[in-house]
Length: 318
Image (cartoon, rainbow, N blue to C red):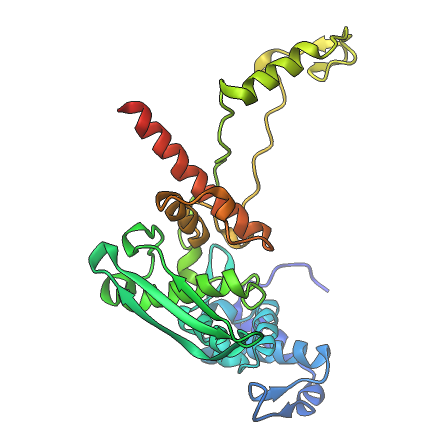
């Protein structure tokens, strides 16, 4: 078999179509309650994904000739109990990741979140001060859950043109996602809306520098003075090579932080926006609502820390 890559999309689709197990597809059951189809095993899902990848105009371009991507979308649709083709046509490829339309994510929340009835809400304020207040009732204990969005002017990630043409609708979508990720994080675990990560910049280190005064600095200096000093031979020195001391500019560079899942960054995610807004509203870092999800907690605290540092700099310049 030749290892030469296939550059002709038509030839690739013909190869995929020729590999479809038509017998396995014939055994796939049609259901009126489980997204239109009911698969018995993973083999049927894989064959269906091949079929979807050669469905041409029935799926978006980023899924054509891509059985693996089609399988990821199909499995997501099965988890949501939705039609795989409907989910596929609400998907996009952004920063080399599959993301979904806000309307679909809203539908998933309404269908999958453990709430009674549907999410209700209203708006307060006008212009840049506009906020969305959402309410729902927990299915578990009947408690009312309330979420108030940040002011629309403080939301930095606004890639969708609907933020200008229909800002109330986009603010509702934003608020529903934030409410879900705060109170029902398992519903949208690993799922992102295209507006969240589009054109995201490179991640930067937002760890605040340690203060040079105060009790913490005094304790640090005391520990350094109390620590015993040891003679280090060139062979033991981590900045040597075969006993030769390296120049300062040849020492090992620090390891850069890895990018977040799905290409997101703390300074552009809505959890980051929430953290920054929380600081401006006088809340402390201990008020972070994300305890179970490490990534969301990291983003929220990054936003809070950035807002704190900006306030410190502004205070020093006055």
